[in-house]
Length: 364
Image (cartoon, rainbow, N blue to C red; front, side, top):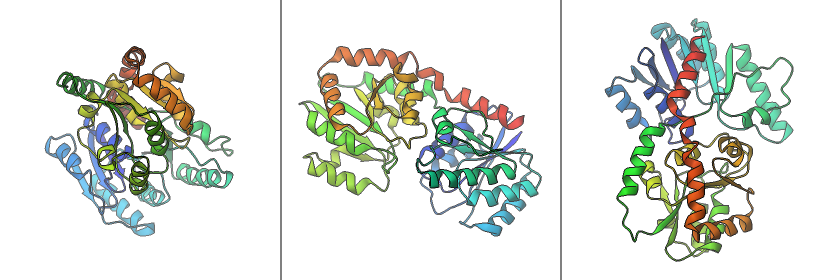
């Protein structure tokens, strides 16, 4: 079976990480190819090139950005030449309609688009999403949400619009747990304790609440680390400086050693908004066995099983976050209780299970 994975730019973000993991952990009888429909962005290119070198990715196609009939024409010719059995499109946007059109005209039988974010809460924005999904459906593309939170955000669905079965995101839980444990074993006894958040620095997240809460609750021997990059970096650096925190120590940028950073942390805090679609970083923290606290928004509530796998705090409530951080920084016993909850639930999101669900869907 040949699957063509489609991205638009190799950004260091959630859908690119998901594509990388799905390709790496697909069954051996599945031959994956990757199309990058916007070669201007190459941040994750080395990681995908490693898959090519390892024989886990048959081919990497890089295109200059285009749209409309030109994109459809290129898609048609690529699919006629490579003959994929299925297309898995990761970005859900208007341009991908043209790409899907070309693939359908070339005879590709099975097409899916990944839904990774919740729909806008405003009725106008939700109607635009509905319209986009209706056009995908008319082209024979099934929209597959990664969480029930996304399904709920789209309700009520227009008459005739159908979504695919939810397929949750995943990560390589075993590898991540091993790397985190190795880093944890190497920590010095007098090492500073750390609160960690891993997420893109953009408006969908809410690092500002965590920054303010930590600044109010800070205790000697503790530090906050925010891993990730994005359009909100400058404003968050300014906020950290305003709160008396060193931006260079707090904002670490994009890192390739996230499992090791998880292993060297003592608490994982995920402050985000209701626009959150899933939160792969949450399942990485669970796999690493970290105690987890997160915003009480639909996606986090779902991933953390209603609070069984971690603790949920009011979204954007700096006082509640500050009070809970104070308690957890002061109590190893409370952190251990949260850690036990994480360890008992982390393996349910292993990427091999996710990859198997996707392959079964695409070959149906």
